[in-house]
Amino acid sequence: MTLALSPAARDALEGWCSHLRGVSGAAEKTIIAYRADVLGWLSFLGEHRGEGLGVPALISVPLSDLRAWMAHERGRGLSARSLSRALSAVKQFTGWLTDRHGGDATAVLQARAPKFQRKLPRPLETDDAATVLDRVAEQPREEWVAARDQAVVTLLYACGLRISEALGLTGRDHPLPAVLRIKGKGGKTRLVPVLPMAAEAVARYVQLCPFDLDAEGPLFRGARGGPLNPRLIALAMEKARATMGLPATATPHALRHSFATHLLAAGGDLRSIQELLGHASLSTTQAYTAVDAGRLLEVYDRAHPRAAGQDS
Image (cartoon, rainbow, N blue to C red; front, top):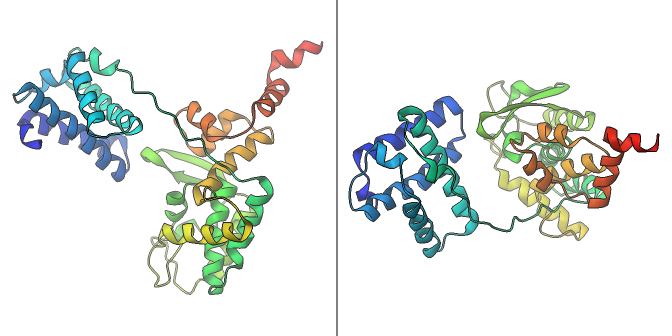
């Protein structure tokens, strides 16, 4: 199918990927996924129209062609969630082309993504989150490995880090400062306060680690001294939850969900939690937390100035 891709379309695609990599600072995995989505779109257009398309034609795609592509993708088994992601990539690509070359891209830029049911996160209960950190450390392994795994899961829960962010720390980050500067998705940087429990867990691991943790190398090491494989943390969580009778949803990522949910349940501000998590959209943070509606109303009543002034 990619044989239908015109030289102009191919050059545009590679130019956009270079833009994502150099200017936007997108993660390489994101760029690879977006490139595949847009490549499929451009290839379909070439086949559908029966001709190689130049940049103006790529910008002013009619709604009928866009709908035909979406129907084709669903017909080959693409889920609504995956199609929504692909459409997002196509919109970003088309918007970039329009900024560079001008033209009317209304049909593409205003297209609605297919609806799909988002899977709600399943955070742990507060007591379970605290217990699972200890259970990870109690598993029968070398002492430094147990300390390493506990340090990683503590960072996920106490600081709300993604597993990739925790494993992305280097020897330069130790000892952990009061505030960590984290480079997250899309190359976006955020500041994350470090609780004493997290700093202490990492310090204990570093003290026991048998490898030289140089400034440029990974902070968390595998058994042979290389970068730690995230699958090992997932396995440690699997064993810990088995001893506690927790469901399969109690994963390392669930600790990040728990961080957000427990902060909000304690009266934390949703916008501040959004910043701590590094979410671009507040709606993402809302979906990320699992506080019941009654608890949200309590937070609202306590914090909103109009609500607080009703008694006066």
